[in-house]
Image 1 (cartoon, rainbow, N blue to C red):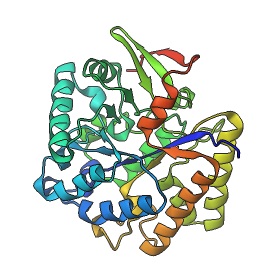
Image 2: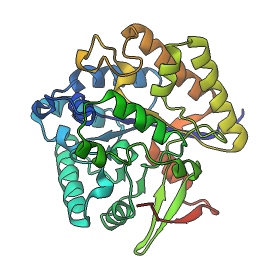
Image 3: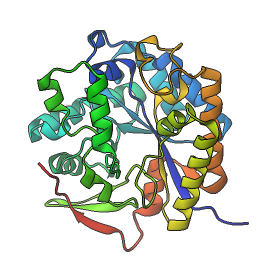
Length: 323
């Protein structure tokens, strides 16, 4: 029997309020939440497929009692718990070291109180990453970071986001690095280690298409499916096969909106693929998971890290970022 290469699966548990806040719309301060809708839906699909994955949780959600049941369900189902920051602000690169220490300490405490698990994995909101962030993560004992997104399309995504949002110039300045720069497309697709003054930290990139470096996470695939379901299926299947051919063990990213439609959360109808019927959307999402499991041994990111960290030959990169 052929041994499948490893792949990992993670879900950034961005909540309704965080999308509204990032988009510049009013009303986010009330912290509207859809976690009671989406978490049971996601867990049911994962259980049916025998999958345990990594959920990156926002500390602010963990701090609210109304979300406690949904978040505890994730931990009780045996999924890995990661830290997605306290306030979900995609401009962590602007934070001082002291602000980052406080941000991580608050989110760690809230997540541990809600789930019983103290996270040691991190993904920055909007793929926000800096040397300072990596140094603070290393100092606080994190096993790995998962904030890099090696694509050349970041500036295009940011331009589209600015055109469709309601942001003033100051808010756009804060978001000036959202989705990264063209140079990010040159970062490695395979796991590597950051070289820091205090030591090293493992980086697990979100996988993009080898060679072309265009996104292959499910939100992008579902968006393609609004034009042609056949194109979306063929694109994702081809991307996974190219990963196998090039020796890339993919780390595939999910979002809550991959499991929801505009009928579930009317305030987010403006997002791509939110016009799909929820049943149709869930079928397409699960089909992608079927394709992934057919070619790879799918695990949580933490399990992927354990299988990777002892390998010889991991690249060592200086943690340098453009200003």
